[in-house]
Image 1 (cartoon, rainbow, N blue to C red):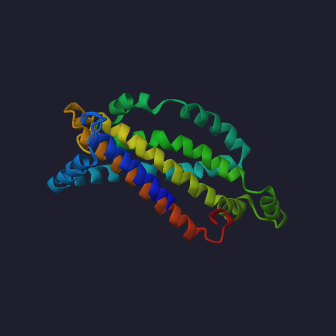
Image 2: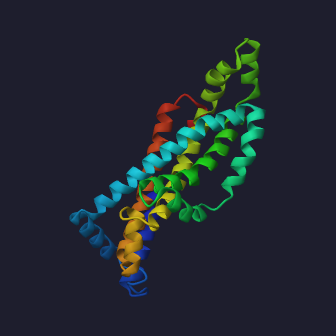
Image 3: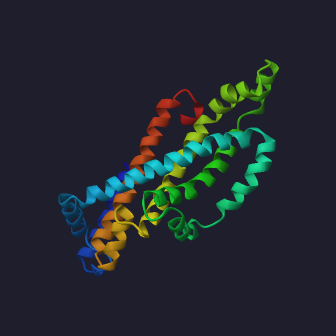
Length: 246
């Protein structure tokens, strides 16, 4: 109820600021104008085309980054030699601004979906690796010691003790990094794109269609909130016996 009240309060403030003429429509259109424009784009089919393109790109890009970051993060979090070999390089690259890779990604991959996948990958993979490494390092040493006492080889300690213990934290890492993926998706679509939510924002900016820009920004927020809440709900189901999800 508190969360709903916050959103309602912000909506009323927006309605009052535009309805009373405190802000010009070109800077902040009214809620009614935004809703009308989004409904128009949905009726024309433009909204669904943009939404489908963006959902496809973020799904593929995020899955590729996650599929590679999980095993690498587990590896460097479990073995010091691998950490010494990989962690400094990953730490070095993650400080490079993703924006700087946009023109390079166009040269490397063109302007198609591959370039969008690459930007999402660069923006999420390196952060994921380090966060997953930290998740693995938080596994209690007593658990690993028990496995060695029982005579388990390193491979079984990794698959039966380390990974299951770190899995709730890894899930949280994926949930957090999914929010970053949405940001990098829009960045990729702002340049050299012909469809998608970010592309539509760029086109609307050229023609001062502020209602479309605001509407798509709100839509991105709703999509991000939905995906976050879905992952939270799945976490409670998958890890319901783990104290992390209580």
